[in-house]
Length: 143
Image (cartoon, rainbow, N blue to C red; front, top):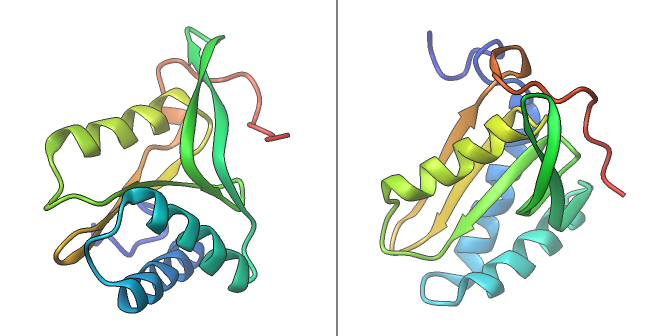
C-alpha cells in the first residue's frame, strides 16, 4: 500500500500541516542549532498554524492493560500525533525504535520523527491501537 493511504497513515492532513511547519522552521533557522531551539521553534510554528501543540507532553505507558509509568513526548500535536525531534547528522535505528515504542505503549497511533540535520528529514510511523499488545483501556486525555 502507498504511504499516503489514510488507512496506513491516519491523520494524514494533520501530519501534512506539521511537516509544513517543520520545513518552515528548517528554512528559517537552517542546520546547526541545539535540539531545544528547534523544539521551541516547532511549538511556535505549530501554534501559529492554528494547531494545539503540547510541549514535553506526559503520556502514560501501559503493560498488559495497566499503567506502568509515563514518558515525555517532545511534542504532542492535537492530541493525535507525537513528534520526536532530533538535531543529528542523520537518523539512526534507535531514533525510529524510540518513536515506535512510544506509539506501541500509548494510545497515540501516529508519530513523526523529524531531524533538523544537514538535510531536513522526516519519517511517519503509524501503529494502530487494535494492533497493540498492551491495549490501553481508555483514550489518552492530556491535562
